[in-house]
Image (cartoon, rainbow, N blue to C red; front, side):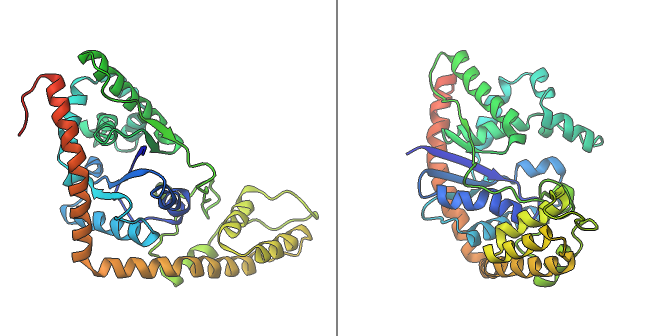
Length: 330
């Protein structure tokens, strides 16, 4: 069975964009592939999070993953820092990575612009750590967005370079796995094209009913159509796209007809959309609360996931050590 590897940084709660964009697809993929899903807490250190937040955020994401349907009996779900073998492979890959190629990565240049007072080595070698996460498990499919494609090319480059330097055919080149057809692009309610934490336009899975309603009612709109059957501007199409995701076809058709005959009232549409988002999110929110309340269960699931991940990771590190020329770590 092909191995799929995917991780998420614990820098905040999951939002509806995460849920519809990837997590629902992961739930389906765990039935079709040998999946390794991890919470990338080491990656989050590039932003220097407070120590208290590291564990709390990791377990928050774990509870949300479970509430969304990821099953630790079907997929290996673990916290990155519970698998120290990642760091050893990260070291080996860094030894074969070159300063110029790391400095040219778009993600490094963007982060360096965003945080000029914190341009740390972790930012620079981020692609090597990402590659270690993937290659440690011999991952062949990696579900990523377009913003990570350059880092995926770096992972393939590191795999090829390792094989070339040591004259082996050990690491396969991991391929980006498109979620097209399985994932949905969720728009931002601020008029932007995509929901994202950095844009501050998210509806989080843990948002309560009042918070969701408040966010939806603030959604950007225009003065309304003046010609029948006119094309919807982006800010309005975003609302309809959201409604298409969470509302019934009848509700969507009702407001679409109101728009087309120039009688739509955006306030009414937003109230309906808020109610439909709340109805959709409420069961997930309740499951998150249930999982979050049982910290012992979360620790047990994380521990079992780490044990399964380390079993495969230890084999990889043992073989990599032998290829490089180091004696066994046992």
